[in-house]
Image (cartoon, rainbow, N blue to C red):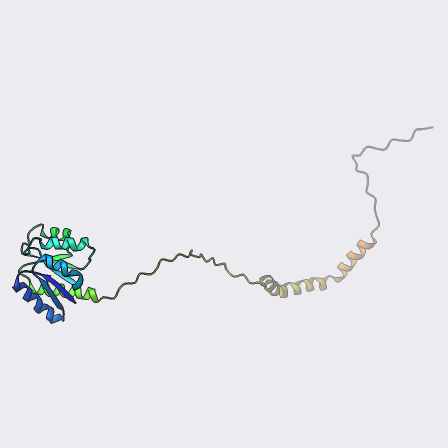
Length: 205
């Protein structure tokens, strides 16, 4: 990982260089903001530590604002000697990701470098493309046996047929007699209902 440190204090720069060598990182440093802006495109740092108070005509926060205005999204950590109320808000508003106060705490600085190294080496997260197909609704119908009526008839028939055979065998003559009577019965004319009017009598001569 390449670290850009814009700092005019040699002691702070030496501390960061020792920490960077422990993790196998490279440090590029400038003492003024103008040089950092001019060389930023060619340096292509992975992480920036920016001192807020710099020698020259522009401050560290001015450099950060110009980098963000140019579209750079490189993580930037502000380094300030004035850890007072409102300093963090000013750094964040200028475009810094976070800030660290002087004198530089070794443990916190090591943790910051390791954190951004892990982010840099993390595999990219691939988001699945949204589906444009219309979801299908599956309707399930209870299966109906194709031969259900045949199966029911096959089960009931063995119980019904013996009963019919018994009734027919018990009364064969009655069945024949009834049939014979029905065939040979004489035709009987219907009687005149009692409440019907009597036929007129023939006139006497």
